[in-house]
Image (cartoon, rainbow, N blue to C red):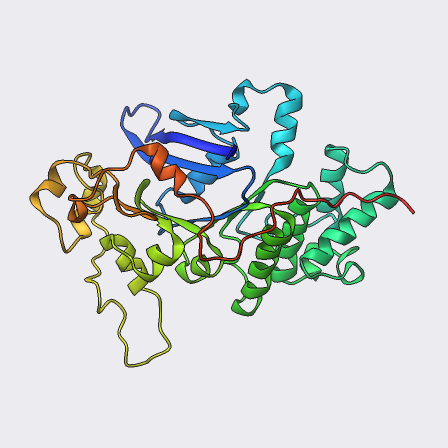
Length: 357
């Protein structure tokens, strides 16, 4: 299978100050593959500060990796021609977390839909542009007559966020990176937005990288999942295995923190939940989770664990599974494919192009 988008062992470091030589590792040793001929939904989950948005910025070529390489259709964006880079910008789209800050309050919402079409010259007339926009709005469950011609403050948060999904859709992308797309909308609207994203994947063949801290929605939409902690992978693989049967202590902590509709059930009773140790942030040796792990062993303080393959569809970075084989980076990225027990999306090119008349 041909790779559409690849992250090859990428890391990102930031300096802590102008005169300070110390660095902060925001992402470390990440590998990810999204195939061209098998649209998928890859979930990237973890608590705040785990490196999720850094990964999104790297995949979008907003920032460059300190080490490693991002490839789109086998080519680094830095080495692309102007034409190739324009195609990359069109085919890899993003949906941001805040559905209001994405808008200019002085312009009607129509602007965020018409400007991309003009920028990438995807419509030859105003009538053709209108048809493309109406088609995109319909796919995300919005009526053009109730949406267009209004200012952002005249629409609900759910409507604004769905317009941003439509904005990405009019560009006929191959990949959409959704960075916490439902975290700032009402619970009643989350299902609507998530269903819109699933529809894009299954009907139009668009791959999604779904970034979230919410494992409930991650399980609802994902095929495969990556769990990050302080910039490093802790667990990776089939979303059903990772979320329903977590193996890494950190993943267990996250799953055990999901509230249950039972007033007699106390959170954190299955896993000992320990607060983050601020002093551990400066520790550069050993497992990043060691200060919070109830199963920590001496070796956990001495070196960082590799990713062990505990199942054909899962890898875990924990010495509890040191009897299992170590996974090379390429094999870790190969786990990021459609889970076999989930409905297969239709592997088709997204087609929104229409003609006048």
